[in-house]
Image (cartoon, rainbow, N blue to C red; front, side, top):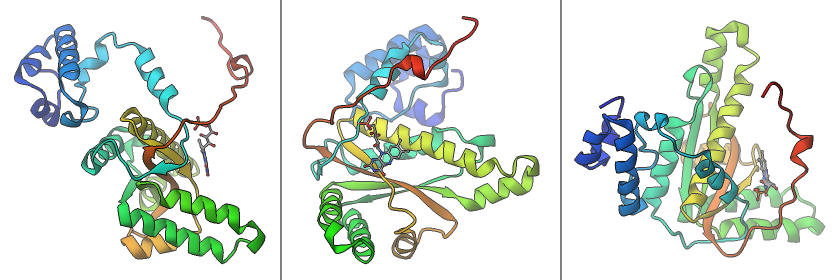
Length: 256
Ligand SMILES: Cc1cc2nc3c(=O)[nH]c(=O)nc-3n(C[C@H](O)[C@H](O)[C@H](O)COP(=O)(O)O)c2cc1C
């Protein structure tokens, strides 16, 4: 079996493990496995490395991308278990690329009462600085986020970034940017993956207002710099209309 990780090998039926020595047979067996096994019983991203050589259509990826939208408001009714959400986030965290494989991404997932605590902190912080006449709108948004089921907090570990800067001085000014790129890839992956399993989500940015509270409450290392908050929960309606500027304005190709 080529480069099939032990966790994948454990997750797959033995017929598939054997078949994976022949990529096309492995692909067919894995398709059957996927069709006949509920997603909650499978491991996320357990596709063997051998699968990269098989003709899986890019349309499958594009369909997932198109399925990801911004949803608000959200409910506390989750279509999958918290354990499955943890698994999805952990797999994304492990497999999303980073510059020089520096692995600067860090994540905290808050469920239930812990999630509500985050939005209570954010509400308190904003209440102290938002003008009274603007509070109705801000307070309404805070109540909306709190009513969701959970929040994924995305961080970039500055200890890793600084370590890379010290090690590769030539690229010192690039590492914070690349850490941001890797984090953005992770945010998008988690957002897309959660929506693939039927959840709704929206991306928020109340950092750095809430950073100190988060460090204090959840004992997050001080080197973890908060970048974004992905609020998730059950869908309560459809995503809003989305306008697209012409792709011709955004795309060029040469030599095809
Ligand atoms: C980098 C980035 C920052 C965003 N920040 C916020 C935000 O702070 N609050 C918010 O409600 N949505 C935020 N969004 C969501 C965008 O408004 C949304 O993705 C965009 O309008 C396209 O809609 P869609 O997500 O349904 O495709 C952000 C999205 C990105 C990619």
